[in-house]
Length: 55
Image (tube, rainbow, N blue to C red; front, top):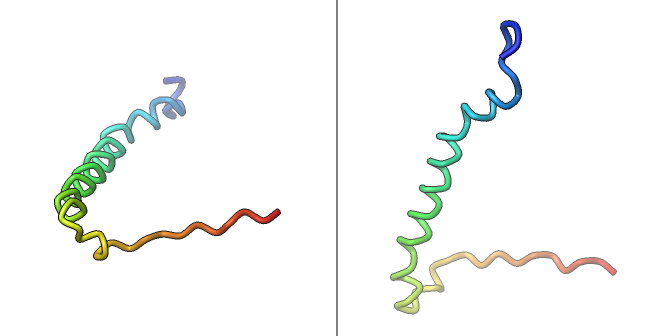
């Protein structure tokens, strides 16, 4: 740290725990959906369609 303000690296390190928690929550939600998908309940999920690229 130089002077009284934190460096960019130090600011980003403060977010590591927050990002890690977000990733863990996403994985937990995705894993909890697997039984529904395996039982054929995929109709309950919203399918996202991506726009076709313009040529």
